[in-house]
Image (cartoon, rainbow, N blue to C red; front, side, top):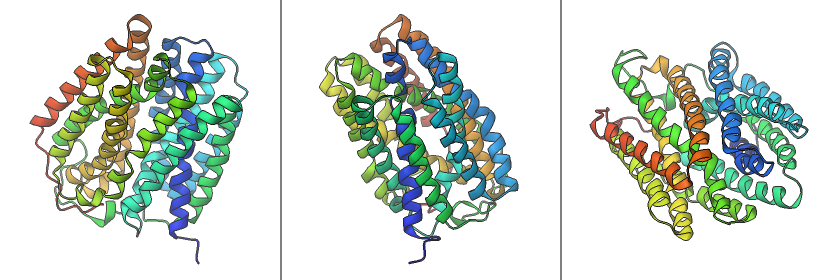
Length: 382
């Protein structure tokens, strides 16, 4: 069997890319809080990684426009793997912040291209992207076991090993033309990049990622605060991640048929249910059940929807730039969110914290309801 362009190469790339992400960032809040750092200091570390991402994403995007996509992103991930090894030896807040920020910033700068590969390959989106979910689920579980039974720092050694295997997958994928439209579709709107629809969409992006990235950072810590052990928290994260598997696998049955606007409304309704449960219902078991049913599902729908919306509202030759700007605003909103979130948790309770996220989700729902988007029905990306 020829390896280049094979299903196996995509499997390795997605499985170990997202497994690496889980090992690097899945338990960062637990790791730092257990080392005696405050929630504000945790937010400083996480926010710093987003600042680095804001700086690196346009730079890596520029390199992607001028050089081979596959090799640019391979070099970036090799540097991230080396920094992951260095993170093992970081003992002080400054060195942890510096190394973690650079590592995650480099990792995040490759995400637009990695996600794009699933829509550009000859294989159906769900049958490739599903391995990313499986990889993150495995990484979450392995991360908890490594943390509990080997050492917290060992997570970063295994992160680098996993990233090395991911690189083997990337090398085997078949190169796509850097200026090709997403899944071969073209747009004829000639609206440019900074049209009204795209600007409003970036506001929605900021609201969505500010609250969901905050939730990702502090949900494991909230469960631990409720008395759940680290290994059980990892199991919960595993179940949360697995819950998105059917959504990805059967994405072609609804993502191609439901309009962009209605999908946005569904996403924010799921967030309202999730955050409303955390702040209004005081039962841990219900928190766990709702987390499994809504957290990963809302996020993965938005990730897929992002590609469809960009195709619908941005000219074909600007779609990669648009995806890069979405990633940049994702990082920017997360910087602001992490800074405010840490201060809120240092002063108030998790209930108050999630009440604020709930209210922001309500605002996001309101904007989505009145946001008139093209339906996107003609773009069969999935």
